[in-house]
Image 1: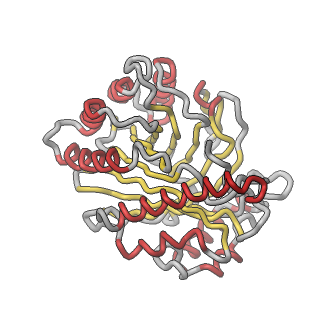
Image 2: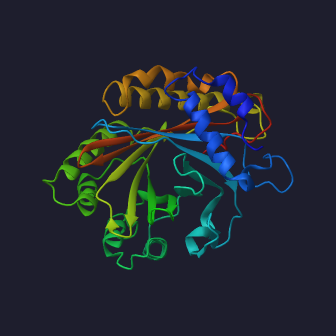
Length: 359
């Protein structure tokens, strides 16, 4: 079995809003529904599992509507090739795939555990937005969704074109493919230069429509807070999320805030190998996590205040190698929808890969 249930069950209900008995039941349901994915441990020959952990996406909507928790499992993939194979066996060919990291995530909803809701791929070194890369992504979007009209998507991405703007503010961060929902998600990494307010207004208008619409107003409110608090903070990473479907470009933008560094030494190293650098990175990580938690639970109501202490102590779990991930705030016509992403890679002190250093 490639999920470490022994360690996970020891930790259950110590952070009741983040890890409950219901989560354990849901994870078991997904694992049992996909024996071929989970029959081998991450360290067994032939296994494609990256580690023995699980990653969580808990959602809070400002209108009070509930959203099911999703669970992700990481798998290794080949790199420096222009093809990927999705869960259902479909092979996509695209030049952008040459720049993918060596891991993908299958995200599942326990209400339909046999098929992932989406498959998440991350890019290495944030390939820039240029005419060729924009065209390549639009081609992929059309293939995934079946929607041949990608003009709105192309217009949006051209606002961020590094050559046309004569800046280098944006790069491809991730692509999230949902065969089930016929959608493709795209995230764009933002560098640490101050936000160009005219450009951001144009991005929101191209996505959300009229400046008087609720979607535009709510999204601009989120954007202004993120721009003022996080974009120029070198402890944090800011990423913008968009979604394109068989119906066109979705009228919503997600603003992701995450620590730029990890709480642990890179896989295969120890803190004492370079203690000064490790301490510097750890302090940066802790500052970012504290700021993200405070700004999403206290300064705003993007996440419930009751989650605050649990989020702050998550990486101190005794039984699991726990990881604070990020927060994504989506501006919508109803208000905001906020996703908290976090997880664990296996037992505390285990030999599984942890997280690679971000440089």
